[in-house]
Structure formats: structure tokens, C-alpha cells
Amino acid sequence: MRLILKNLKLIASLSYLHMRSKTLFEEAKRHIPGGVNSPVRAFEPNPFFVKEAKGARIYDVDGKEYIDYVMGYGPLLFGHANERIINRVKEAVERGTLYGAPTEEEVELARRIKKFYPSIEMVRLVNSGTEATMHAIRLARGFTGRRKIIKFEGCFHGSHDSVLVKAGSGALTFGIPSSSGVLEDTARHTLVSRYNDISLTEEIARRNGDDLAAIIVEPVMANSGLIPPDIEFLRGLRSIADELGCVLIFDEVVTGFRLSPGGAQEYYGVKADLTTLGKVLGGGFPIAAFGGREEIMRNISPSGRIYQAGTFSGNPVSVAAALAVTEMINEGIYSYLRDYGKKLVSAIRDIIDDRNLKATVNHVESMFQIFFTDRVRTYEEALSSDLKKFRAYFMKMLEKGIFIPPSQFETCFISTAHSDEEMKITIEALDEALKIV
Ligand SMILES: *Cc1c(COP(=O)(O)O)cnc(C)c1O
Image (cartoon, rainbow, N blue to C red; front, side, top):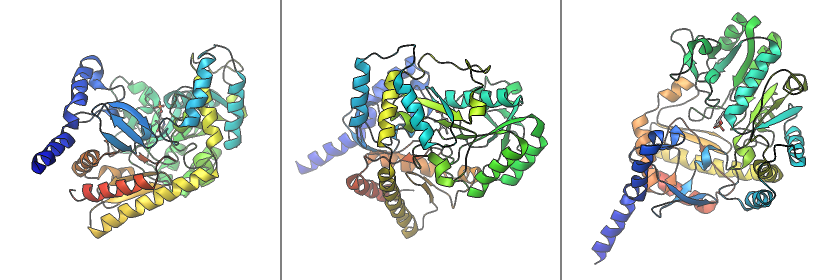
């Protein structure tokens, strides 16, 4: 009897990937390309389909519970279904969801964003990080009257044409489309440099100085696993932009409100000309922003001649969520997140050291990622990670009830809803999962 029970339990624990979620995935693939509405969500044999989530936990349609370190790919700094955010949103929804006319709350949100980000003198709200970087780049081009931008290999700025560009072969300067459908003519104006390599960047920038509109960078690279910046690199970008008169864009869609109230700019002490915000700002609701020096921002329509618009921009529901988020941003949460991150990462390092694993963990505040290689300080080193081992680690973690991003080239996120209990369960799972790699 005990044996039967034990076997039943085992079958139950293995079959979660093969039941309702599996059926739904097959069905989804008939209607939605790849079965998902954003590519990173798909993995083999099938992703779990979500029923609900609360705090640091997420529950699938087959009744399995997971501790979540994906956290919506970054936005959920306060966990799932945070009460203060939800209450604020409920209140807002009752008063209408879209007006097509301005509200006092938008003005208040703009005022708060400016207070957290001293480099932002004016700000405009949009709906996604993709929109924010797209408009920031157009604005930089319109403002400078120049065409080219520099981006860095491995940095992600959303899914519009100018930034879906990777390095060409040979000298890393000539961008080629990283997606079919992006014109070579467009990619030609995106120059690609190497992250944390200031001398190469300086060389590319100088060679294109007269026609260089902007340098766009993730101040912490969070879309190739996690790669921290050399502070001298960020400072160097600031000096290049000053010298050549181009616009320095910090894409803080991930780092904004996550590293500190003032994002990476406050954390590293380097100011941008234009900043893009998203993810954490809406606490799980779609809202993003771009802002910066007034001299640049005032060129946007209707006050200027650079066009930008959006039906849902500044909608009262997302703005209400962002007001709740900006109220909860204070010093207390950052020390909590930092402590959790430090403890968890040091436990991972102990496991790696004890077992002499060929693995390394990168970590900045409430973000971390494990790579199965010796060290990762550059994009090339991230690419050298053993993806087979990562896949085995991911699957084992999932089986143990820990949800991390299925891709090596993403980042794990900690929220204020992660507590000692989650920490304990996570470390036990890691201990098991790292046995098999
Ligand atoms: C997620 C992300 C974006 C795109 O934001 P979306 O809201 O998904 O359009 C842009 N930049 C960075 C750094 C991101 O991580």
C-alpha cells in the first residue's frame, strides 16, 4: 500500500507537464504562433499554463505550485497580486478605463518620476518598453538631425526595427538585421559595439561622430543572462556623448526602480540624457515612459515637430498601478531585496565551490543568473555557457517547484514577496538541481 501511494505520488509529480498544460499547449499552437504571445515563454516539451499567482508563488492549471523567479520578466518588484496595487487599480477601474483626455494622476506620476530621476526634466508615458526605446531613438535622431545610433551586442531594447540588429562579422561596427523583415537599410544605421569595451566604442563613435545621434545601452545587461557594467564603461559613454554631442540613452526598462529608486543612474552615479522606464513602473500593468533633458523633450509633438502618440498612453488604470508602485518605493525595500539576493547567491556559490562545478553566478542587487562556464564578464563569455547543462538545471528546478526563466539569456528576479521560507525551499532545490549538471 505504501509503495503504491509512493508511486502514485511520483506519477503525479511527473505528469504535471503532460496533462492540462500539455493539452492547452497543443491547442494554443493551432491558434497562436508557437503557442505563445512572446517567444521566451515557450519551451519543450511544454510550458505550464498559469491559473493564478500570489506573492512569490505561481500556480498552474494542473494544480502545481512554483516559487517564481521569473516575476513577469522583471516587473513584479512587489510580487504577484500585491494588495496595494490591486486596490488602487480596482478603484481606478470603477471610474472608467480610458478617457482620451488628460488626468491629474498623469501629472502626479510625471512629477514623481522626475523626483526619482533628476536627469528627467520632462517625461512622456507610453505602454511598453519597446515603445519607449523606439520613441527615444526617434527623438534623438530628430533632435540631433543625425542618423546613426550605437547599440551593444547582447543588449535588448524591445522588438522594433532599429534595435533588432546584431553585429556583422569582422569589425563589430556594421549592423545586420537579427530578424528577417528588418531592412538592411535600417540596420545599416545601427552600429554595434562591445559591452564594457570603451575603446572600441570610442573608435566607432569617433569614426561616425558627425552622423551619430545616440548611444543606447542597458546600464546593467539583463538580457544576455546578467552582466554587470564596469563603472568606467558607463562613465566613458557619458564623456563620448558629451564630446560628440550625441544623446546618451539609458534603457532602464529593467533597472529603473529595481536597483534603487533612481535606477542605475543613482546606483552608479552616471546621468543619461534620455531614460526609458518600463517593467517595475507598472507593477504588472502595461505602462512605460521615456524622459530626459527638457531641451530634447520639448521637441515632441504637439509642442515640437517629432511625432509620438498612443491611444492607451497614460490610461488611468496603468497610471493608478504606477502611483501605487511609486508610493511603495523607498529605502526599506532595497535593503530587504539586497539581503535576500546576497544570501541566496552566497548559498549558490557555496554549492558551486563545494562540488567544484564549472559554473558561475552573476549578481546585482535583486537580479542574478547562473552560467555553466568559468566566468562571465562579456557577452562572448555568456555565449560560452553550456546550454545543455542549463536546460537540465532548468528542468530540475521546475520539477522541484521553482520557476526560473527557461533561457540562459534571461535574468532571475527577486521580489519583496520572497521570504525566508522561499529562500529555504529554493536553496534545497538548487542543491538537488546542481547535482545533475
Ligand atoms: C523588456 C525590455 C524592453 C522591452 O520592453 P517591453 O515592455 O517588453 O516592450 C526594452 N528594454 C529592456 C532593457 C528590456 O529588458
